[in-house]
Length: 595
Image (cartoon, rainbow, N blue to C red; front, side):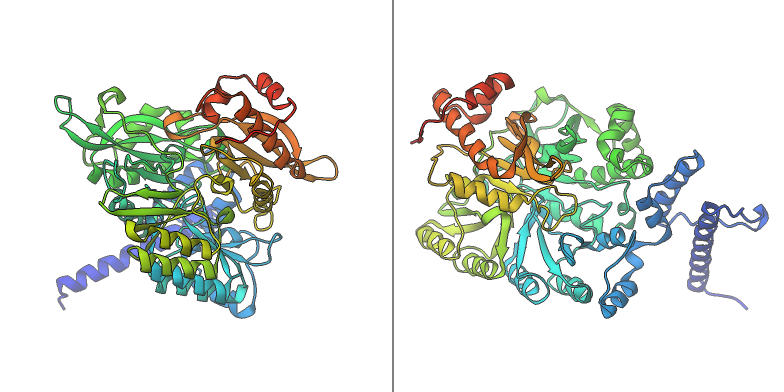
């Protein structure tokens, strides 16, 4: 009996699948100390198995006598994306996950945040932070029906919905997908939300619109299973060279647009320079790799860089499992050489000096009213208090974006949002509508410069209630001080630094003080990313949370009194040593108001 070519292909595929499954089972048995079958009867995993690269990386550590961390063992024993039936069963029983299943649920964007809240938080993915008003309005409905009636804007231009009951988890995930969004890979050891310039496509000085690149990489990640289950989380950002930056130098991979003129080793045009290893909570900005990429090459190179990280990142020590530490262990040149092996084209080298310097960023370009590149149109940067949006505010913003703009909402890495494409003739009307919704668009307000992580009301790692303390700072300073330029104040509850305190003008790191574990902060000053890249220096230790507003007032009053004309806070702190700053900030306060 003869078989058709189609039947032959089917049988070959079936046999490969059986081989992959048996090889995986054999590896599991080996990890338990069960000897392998005789060589003549053994089968090997098929090369098409997307999880194979992760298992092989784990096997290398095990073969070297090292112990995998519990998270790696959990990924090894159960594919997080094969848990739908389990999630549904837990929901029917009203049961939250336990043990390492808590970690595996994060692959779906579900964070069980006990003991701080006996509920799930769900984090989304939205490439470039841009979504339509029907999606924004739908998420407001979802927050009302299944959550706490609010959403938090994150420092990855993303949204989180909190206070989700165990029984509601499947409905939340399904509702998100029905809105054309996803939460897949939004947590755990995955590539997090891909960020891009908040003003992409509307920025008067941008070199390139990054929106299509964010979407392309977003969908590449979603459709390549081998890009999940990394040694640790991974951040990627695209900066298009506009007035409003995206903090790409704080990412594991930062792509920054540059212009190259005629007469050089490469043809003239817009390229992206690649920087690697940013993680400011661990004291490092991404370092320029000396690589120039055409826009159409960026996604392939990002995937290759991640693939090298998958194969070689540390799976035995979570504290050393980020890209920064592999780069430190290997050096940049070895990492680039390994990356080249995964690419069909040669990486292009060019010194930074050969690139035309980008125009400067505007520090407060994400707040207030700003003209777009499209004549007669402007965007408005809106400030929700400490990044929290009530569901009724989300609906109001959706209405404003539809009524005055083009029906889109843009989230930023500073926990705020933009409404774009507003005709200048109706700007005043739009501003009034924003104020009626209980939000501010004033770039000069203290509240517009505050960034705060979730804090200990919803995160077990946080030592302090950052959002409440941030609001206390705003209440204390508003009306007491008038600033003539933006000063960023970032509050983060733990060294993971989700709020990136190390790049703030004033950074606050949450701690517990004394035997009574009083909430407080270490205070640092002088940080910045982008054009004036520098890590903040520690100024004070162990400042009680209730004392922080007065301390910041004293710092700002001293700055306003002692600065040179139009001197920025960063420049002011940079030209003084910490001892001298402590002396200046301890001087008797005088009432100083900037014009």
